[in-house]
Image 1 (tube, rainbow, N blue to C red):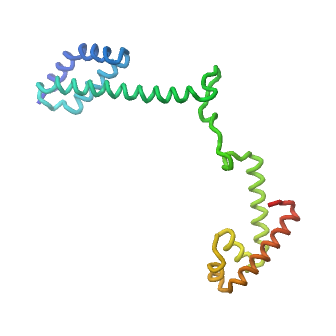
Image 2 (cartoon, rainbow, N blue to C red; image 1 turned 45 degrees about the vertical axis):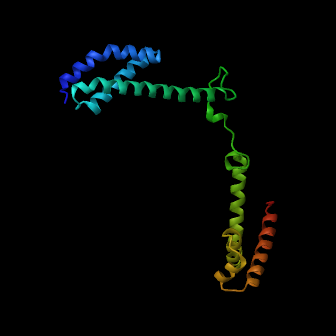
Image 3 (tube, one colour; image 1 turned 180 degrees about the horizontal axis):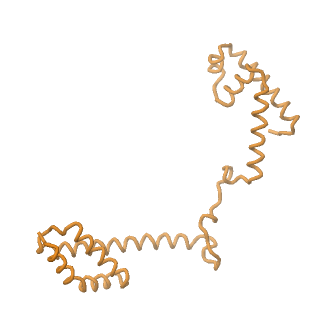
Length: 188
């Protein structure tokens, strides 16, 4: 088991060679310094309790793995940079915002203009107000059939009436709603 003094002495003795090895591998002094520091930290945190004779091999393995990790990160960064630089408008002198370049899918609420959203909300409020004015049985049948998406048999069972009554209530409700909304200028 290496003492703190032995570990410190080992790290001091290997520092220059490890730095040169990392610079040779990555060809960037700043990145090489970070790699060597990360390697030293990993060795001391994870393997500081190992015998001094095992430290050189462990250090070399950790250094190699840290260099490989650096290359993987660079590859990912390069891939994303390449992808974003190929976006329309990315090469211009103006500041490019990727999120602003995305377009909403046609037909989605995100593609809808503010005017359309307000108009739709107002129409729904008018429909709800007119539904509240319907007689109770017509309102009940209409809501179950068209908003709850229940079939005629399910609606009849829930209301405790015949299927013919459900059809009649729904027909009267839709006719009344159509006339009321037409009178208010709503076109569906």
